Length: 270
Image (cartoon, rainbow, N blue to C red; front, side):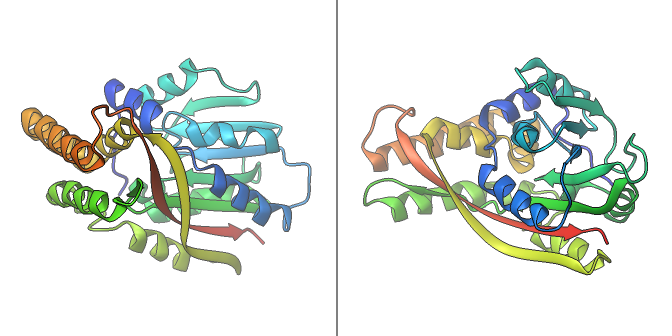
């Protein structure tokens, strides 16, 4: 069963503003693909593209890149920004892709595949991929870390408080972690040439406010916000103020280093 979330215009705008583009993972995907798939690379399909941060990263490598999402608001948001000329977007479910069989060189899903109907999606991915085409499913764990001077451990205790407060609002569909969903999908993929990668750490320097904003885009925070907007705002303000107090700063625009933990799997269609 597919799960539909993140479809409101405000949520789509927050995605665009706060979600981090996985540049390092795109480089890893392309390195995997270039060893297996003959060039030129014509078409990349980024499924569950959201507001398009990951989609545009594929543009330098392909003649054409298409981002798809089930949400009209996410597609409208992606289309409204300046995109490379070879990037376009289409609204459709991940399990019903409007492309011909054997047409796609790369099919990616970046922090989205856990919401799909997994078996239907994998079957559809197999249909549209050409022989030698690659499938790349990427995501990250919720336990982002912050680095700031010599108080990083203090900041991360506060971050854990943030995540702990949101844990009751996580969708039971994905449980405490979506990693098992991805591993189950990996194990059910019949392609013999496939790789599972447990953890890739990436670092980004960004304002503290962007870290807070990113956590607020999570489905668990959005569920809390829908249930009790005042409590959601109180929680964000409480965590922000605790972090700023520990950092001894007065502005949430103070820069910190955020560490994200990605896991992903790659496969090449025989």
